[in-house]
Amino acid sequence: TLSLLRGGWQEVMTRQFVTVLGSAETAESPEQLERICREFITRLTGKQTIYQMLRLEEEMRKRGADCSPAAEYKRQYLALLNQHISGRLQSVRNRRRPPEAYMVRGAERLLKRLCRAGIVCHLASGTDQEYVVDEAELLGLTPYFGNRIHGAREDYRSFSKEIVIQDILRTHLLDGSQLASFGDGYVELENARAVGGVAVGVASLENGEQGWDPWKKERLLGVGAQILVPDWSEADLILDYLGVACPESDCNDPVPAVESK
Image (cartoon, rainbow, N blue to C red; front, side, top):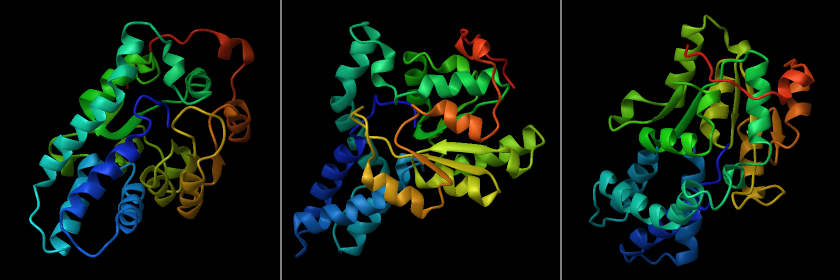
């Protein structure tokens, strides 16, 4: 939704899953296995990573094959993903590349306008909490959220985006019509629509190029995205449409650290 640091994670996960399922030695071709894996990986995007691993474990059992526990598949995946993204993380840490090089186009403008308009922003991710916090800090996004950054936990049943949304409504004494969810996964948009909120989908290309990801676009429309964009470059247009007011002078000012709520 905001960060490109993990861009390409679906390909890393898909390759891993196809390799694992291929070890079951069924009659399925690699192409068939890739279609199966890509479908459920995409459908579970937005949920904690462990749910994709649990599904992989289930697929192995369906094929009558020996399988590792989901936690082991997740450990293997994180090692593969770290190899894939470590150069990006280091390039930002060492200031060889600016943080905005790894943000979805217009992301900071979107957050700045929301915060300047007095909108309380929460960040929720299916990525493990420690990585979400670290990468938000690395990209300079922490000031927009304060301590309202929510990531996956070891006890995966204790966290979900649905739980986060219910906590937001309860803590801030809101009804669902006062909630807007911005995301690129099924889950956050479905959860927002379920409580009567606005679902804003972003079908961005994770390599940072301009244009639509047609796979995301089709699926986000299918789960009821009410607004759909390829990135946040039209943040002003989106927020004007939603009635989020922000004087231009305020929107161009730096955003101070937000109050924790």
